[in-house]
Length: 233
Image (cartoon, rainbow, N blue to C red; front, side, top):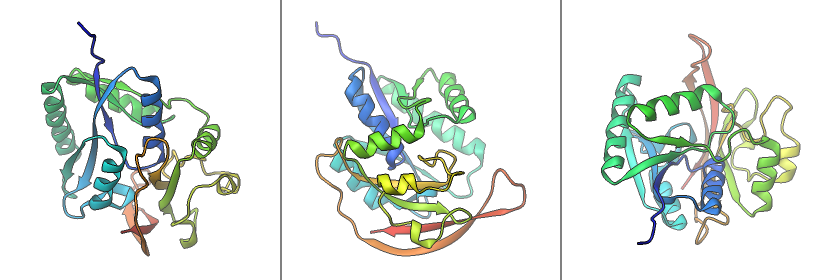
């Protein structure tokens, strides 16, 4: 009897780190990738800090060729509510015989620990294909492989309005401010990946308006943080 590879679902953000981690998993060929799982705002129908429309997310998943599952999260949901919803989603994954999950995280230890603890509670193992890679080497390899990605959100304290809407190129990487991680791993910017070796065809879209929005900063009590967004349609 043929041995089947263990199934895995990917926690999908729509950006470059998710895309590159998925590429690495496909190359390693140790798992059967069953599902891309994404959290979308119930009211906005957009992906969190990426601000990407659900309609474009669906087109992206179709262009890659993996099934997409969406968890709709209300803006008023507490952290406990979020954890409960994720536990329910994990139970559904296990009913499909999926006991492995993958993430595009690179070096944020607290985030990895949180993911591993939460998944361990429900008997699912977490995998991190890009873990501890040098982020400048990683983004340059990403570009060399032919991935194309658009900057859709950026911290307004670090970047001006013109930064969003650009594609990530080698020139852009070399000219990033010294305090900015080349992959934006500290949340400096967020991206939408629309073409590359994991895509069956490029995702078509148009650029919309650029807007600035303010959010509570989880690291600085009582203060807000401003982000520029470039809408993609």
